[in-house]
Amino acid sequence: MHLTLCDYLTDVVQNAVEAGAGRVTVEVCEDRDAVEVAVVDNGKGMDAGTLKKAFDPFYSEPGKHPGRRVGLGLPFLRQAVDQTGGELKVESTPGAGTALRFRFPAAHADTPPAGDWAATLVGLMGLPGNFELAVTRRCGARGYAVARGELIEALGGLDTAETLSLARQYLQGREDELKE
Image (cartoon, rainbow, N blue to C red):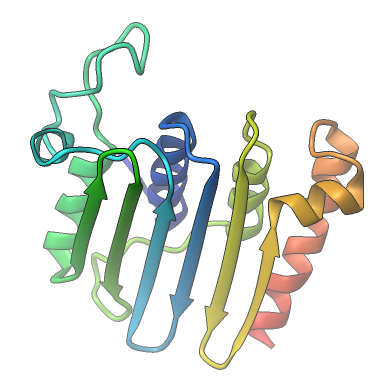
């Protein structure tokens, strides 16, 4: 089961990359009322029937996960959103990609904790493949933006412990600035 908002984000972005997205954009906006997350990709998208099945916990796209036949990410996200009175919206077009947005009320007792944004974003930036990941984070009036390509260019890659550590330090610094 997912424990944090970062877990949900990881699941959605990893699915986008696995669906062949060349570009994934993520926006995470927090304020005193809500936490809102939007993930938009240009992957293979889904038709209406597949989108409906994606929320079935006993369905996973054939061949996507060797050794298992279930996909629990979206069903767990829907359950958590419904439990808190939040919102979840998914739009998808075959051949064009998917846009997923979810919102949790900040003050609800069952809203999951955020998790470690810096570590999560580094993990997502370090996923294998040739794709761009652009992230915008906002907390109230403060915010920052970072793109996978920029980190790769600045660090020479994201494929060693050293470069991943440097990326994490950079993102942790941006996260710390949001809380000042």
